[in-house]
Amino acid sequence: VTTSDPSRSDGRDRADYVVVGAGAAGIALACRLTEDPSSRVVLLEAGPAAPSSEAAARAVQNGNQPAVAPGLNWKLQAMIKGAPGASAGRQGSVFVYEGGKVVGGSSAVNATLALRGTPRDFADWSESCGDGWSWPAVLPYYRKLEDDPVGPHELHGRDGPMPIRRERRDELRPLHASFANACREAGYGETADHNDSATTGVGVYPKNVVDSVRISTRIAYLDAARGRPNLTIVPDALVDRIVWRSAYAAEGVEAEVGGERRQFLARRVAICAGALNTPPLLMRSGIGDPGELSLLGIEPRVALSGVGVGLMDHPVVGVWGVPTAEACSLGEPARQVLLRYTSARSSVENDMHLCMMGGLDVAALFPALAATSRASTVAGLLCTYNRSTSRGHVRAVSRDPRTKPAAVINCLNEPSDIPPLCDGVRLAWKMFKHPELTCKFDRLLAWTDSLVDSDAGLAQAVKAFVRPAAHLGCSARMGKSPEDGAVVDPHARIHGVDNVWVVDMSIAPALPTAPPHLTCLMVAEKIAAELRGMD
Ligand SMILES: Cc1cc2nc3c(=O)[nH]c(=O)nc-3n(C[C@H](O)[C@H](O)[C@H](O)COP(=O)(O)OP(=O)(O)OC[C@H]3O[C@@H](n4cnc5c(N)ncnc54)[C@H](O)[C@@H]3O)c2cc1C
Image (tube, rainbow, N blue to C red; front, side, top):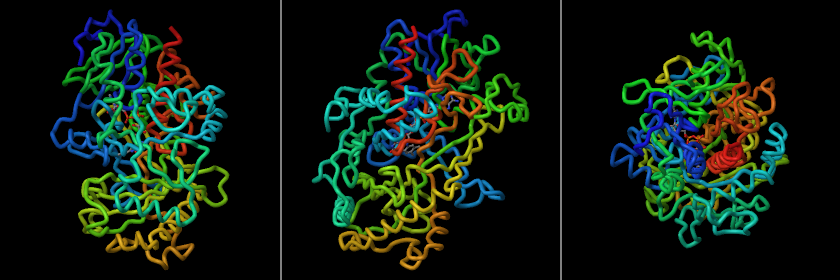
């Protein structure tokens, strides 16, 4: 935390920017903005400056596994399916999002898979958001954020803050090496770079991990920027709402800091609180559907019916088993090998991802699975459909910023999302029959030959076992017109508001065909460049 704090000078000394949320996007944005020494930025974060216990610090450092530890995660709940009559308490219907509540945000706790969106994704984005979001327009920002030694210069950046690395073949653990062999023998080709969208097939995961350490945005961006006199970081600051200077212009935000209410004033406000927290913050500020706001006793200021609507996550179905003692050990890299392939009848390449996951601390990560398996570790194949179209929503249910929002993911609400996952499970099942994999499992859980063979049974089971991938986005969508449900314009500025931007995964019009972390950083890099260009 730096000592100069523009917000402390009784409101007269405004910062240029107040950035809400020191997560993936907020940190990247604040660090790029403060490269201009004349631009003063205050970065507010609800969580602590650093993990508050030894266990949490170890978890954040370990790039081999997602980090779940006391005091580190938001633990926001979402209904997996919004079926009428489903109640939040019903077992199996609720997913707990372990998003990071610490400087670094979810970038400090995530699974470190570093995959880009594809040219096809941005052909779609540019339809609703214009040419500024076409593949040629976004590629320079994917390049800018990364330091990736693989592939041609036109495709990959070499000197960006975020290191992207791939394990060597001789570093693959037995389960992952066997999965790669099974894919090759099933006829899939090999790729040396899953971030080259011209490729398909099986290859090693790109990850933002160096020497087993998770390189969050806190390490990649913030460590270099921390000493800048124009950057003030305020941890443990829970932002309640935007403070207004006139009907449609903000003058900053109000937050709870150490039991005190404080205002942080700035010329421009950037909301980067993540896909589940940004919409409730907008609602508490009077931005949203007027009827919903009135029900909460909030005076409507800017009518935008799209706030919180359209929330997306990638649906995943796991085929799990209990591995033999030799197959994998607790704590080893959870994922090393990924198969990208195109589902039957799809016009979108590489819409399916199949990966082996092993060495998990199931009790911490998947308590329900730990209870069913009665094993200390499990491993399995995860089938992820990356072009799902089902959408849900997230809303504030109170004016109190401490009240958790209500979220519904609606996995597989669209019937067309089901067949690719059914085929994915059949492919996973076939992989398990490969002799190298069969001998690495003591037993498989839940799935049987007859279930996988039956069309109706398989579809039912997929609907029952599906869960979200923790790849949230699209809850404050970008688009040209608020009439189409857009919340921000193609420059990420809130429609109808003068000086407030939303810069996080909320604004994605649709999820990329990949986990979203790199895309979120690309968005932050692009908007940072636009904002710097405005001065
Ligand atoms: C367990 C897990 C595993 C994941 N694995 C992967 C992966 O392997 N690969 C991948 O690409 N993506 C992965 N993701 C998703 C990826 O981490 C996110 O897409 C990305 O971090 C989103 O960035 P963001 O800036 O939108 O939100 P975040 O990174 O979550 O940042 C939001 C920040 O805002 C803060 N905040 C929220 N509300 C307030 C408030 N009111 N006041 C002040 N601060 C506030 C939060 O504490 C947080 O620090 C994973 C996510 C999770 C949770």
